[in-house]
Image (cartoon, rainbow, N blue to C red; front, side):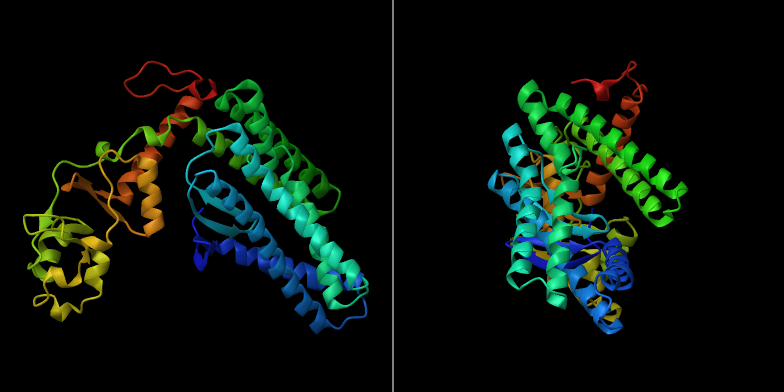
Length: 392
C-alpha cells in the first residue's frame, strides 16, 4: 500500500499515511467524543470530550506506528530492507522487501508486533495506576490506551493469515513441515475461514439491530479474506526475483547529447517519441538523465536556449541497476529513490533504461497468469496447469 502523504523518516524508515487514515481518525474521534467518554465520564463538558478524544485517537495511531516499527526493526536486523510504513484505516502496514528465508525469522518478525502492543498496554496501565486512576483527562487517555493496546495485541494474535497471528502459525507449520509454500497454503486457508466467521458474525449482529457494528465486522472480514487470498497468490507465484532487469529492457537505448536544446528534446523525443525520460551522454560514459519532470521546471520561452545538460539529473545522483539485478530489487530501488526510471549499466557500459511502468506491467501480467493458474485455467500456449497455485 502506497502512502498518500509522507510524514518523514524514523531511523531511515519512511513514514506515511494513506487517505483512509483520515477517515479512521475522524470516525474514532467522533466515537470517543460522542459515545465512550460521555458514558464513562458524564461530568465533563463537551469541549473536554472532543479534546481528549482527539488526543486519544492520535496517541492510538502512535501506538500502531510503534507496533509496525517493531516489525520493521526486526526485519532489518534479519537482513531485509524496509521501504516504509503506511498508516491506513485498519491500522498500519510495513513495506518490507522480500520474505523471510527461515521459519525462525518469520516467527520473530510476526510475534514482535503483538508483544510491542502488550508492552504498551502494560506501560499505560501502570501509569494509570501510578497517577491514582481517577476521572481526569490524563487518566482517561491512559486507561483507553491500555485497553485498546491489549485488544490490538489479541486481535493480531488471531491465527488468520496475513495477521501477525497467522504469520506466527505459518512459521510454526513451516518449522514442522519444512515447506514454506505448504505452510502458507494452510495458514491462508485458516485465515480465509476466520474471515468468513467475521463476515457471518457481522451479518448476525446486523439482524440483531447492531447495524453499525455489524457492518464494520463484515468489512473487516471482507478485508481479511481478500488480504489472505492476495498474500497467498503473491507468495506462491513464480518469485519475481528469478526474473532479471535484462529480460525487460527494450532493444536499443535512446540517448541525446548534453548540448541539445530542451525544445528539440521535447519535440523529437518526448512528444515525437512518446518518452518520459532520455539518457544524456556525449558518446561516452553516462552523463545523466533528463525526464519530463525536469523539463517542467524550465519556462517554455527558455526551452530553445536551455541545453539539456543544464536541467538533467547528473550521473552521480542517479540510482542505477545492472541487467542481472532482480526485478523485485529494481522495483524496491525505484520506490526507495522515488523515481520512475533506472539506467541499466553493465561494467560501466550503458545497456538500457528501465521504467517503473515496465516493472509494474510485468508484475501485473505475472499476477494475472498465476491467478488463472490458481483457478485451473491454462496458460496461453501451454498445457493445462491444473491447481498449480495449490501445490507445494
